[in-house]
Image (cartoon, rainbow, N blue to C red; front, side):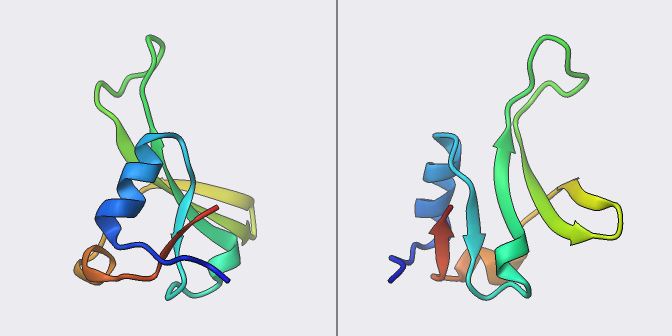
Length: 80
């Protein structure tokens, strides 16, 4: 049984390097978020949230993610 979190709790876990996802997402087993922390070789200068979508035609997609209002207010977040 999963212990569900709200977005703030899940985001704190992500800041510690955990993968987070929502039960309410379609294909939830194939989607999760993590925080990308730029290093000295990165063109990015600030951390950002990445959404990973597995099982795509090209394999696995990593795209920048901006949580929706539904994501921010949801209380079905979990840690992978």
